[in-house]
Length: 222
Image (tube, rainbow, N blue to C red):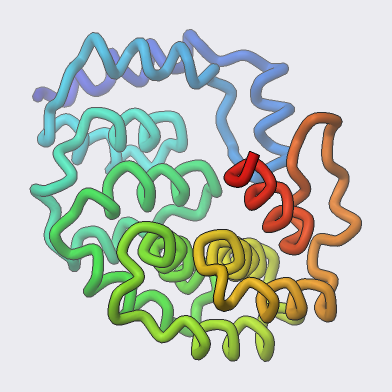
């Protein structure tokens, strides 16, 4: 893809900019104003193009990077590339899409999960915890779940926000998916009270782990 083509795409994204969407996104730390449904429509038209994805990522523009993650080929990235991209992905939505749409489909996912969980950067560590939640739910064999609960119990209360949310998800996932550890997960959540007072819209499940666990178990048993 030529530079002109990338410039044309960026101009198209700029044309989709909506001040109200930007205002809402900026409250969550995402510096872009493109409606995600419209962004996905652009990606659908462009189809999968790895070289274009790399060029869009290099623009350092949040909407451009989100589009890059929709048109890339996840299995073509090396572990070093994905690690570098995660450290560059400071907008929460870019971070989230990178982990969920790309890293989870990569052959390097387990290597990165372990490396990121041990990272001293809490934003990087949060990606490791997000990948761990996925394993807790889908492939828990080989995980030390009681050990993970030990770490959550010791560190979640004082963790920075993004890391705290990721640890909280792991806590809830253990409680939901592993009945033998449910009582302990509930107890940790009750004692730490992380996200207990988080404002939750009607008909939505609270992110407070005990409420989240109990609601999901109730649905499973209904």
